[in-house]
Image (cartoon, rainbow, N blue to C red):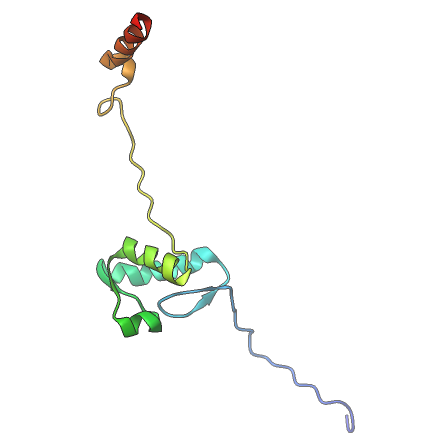
Length: 115
């Protein structure tokens, strides 16, 4: 149409921009879990001596001893929450018998009665 308003339609797909940015590569994700997975891939490559990739830490040559210390550094210094590894220790009857079986409970009960 001659004289009509010109419109341009982009056929490129919109780039996803999220609120969560990977501390290592700078990619942005819409889900926190996805950015945690991305950071974990970088941390898997280094079991010890993890250098902080942020420019302010690079100039100071900050290197953390292990993955957990790096994640703590990222949270405290940069405010970036990375998933911490949770280790659950299970107590079993064999390793820690209940108080009743060890006789401790009856001793405590006897002491309370005699006081």
